[in-house]
Image (cartoon, rainbow, N blue to C red; front, side, top):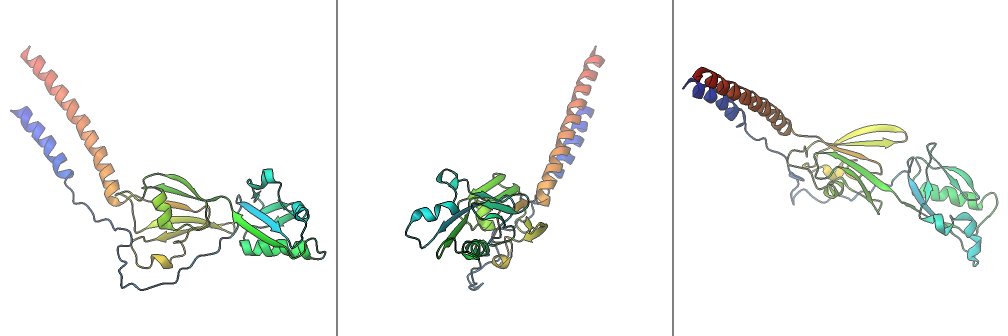
Length: 254
């Protein structure tokens, strides 16, 4: 009888400890309604960063296609693109070193055109087409699939990135997602609320290449983890007590 009472005293606290109320978790765009109004779609122009890979093709008004060839990568290396090195430079055929970090595609296009036309006109009426070949972001934390995501285009929103990562789990904070971003050699951290009606106005809604997205666990998730640890400890202690009581009964009977 005493042994049964001891078991009851051990089980009841564990039961009541596990019956804590569940916190409400905000949903995506929870505060957005059809009366929120229309807003202008703002697509920021990306700036070139270290370790970016750029596709750059130069064309001119010349009727001889061979005149453009010296200013383009060979066909075998074109898909590899131009790697922006640790100093923020690229090595361009015939034109030498060009510092590109912090420039937009339009800025770089203008710089290459300038070098092709002044002080000597190397090509007649050149046009320069530039693309990013490695638009990549990394998503960590309470998502379906952690890791890096590479997209073929040059625009990616926070919602699209999380969708590619399998979405935020039930235990992830949707109202305080962190975005770590490097701009001109400086690291900044922003917070975005995915349930807010102002999400589209955030400078972190549209991602830039190499952004790091972190979805932290809710308090409920941390409480559940703590409860699991405590339950495991209680279960282990309960097992020891049961084993000790069983051995004690055996010795008493003998």
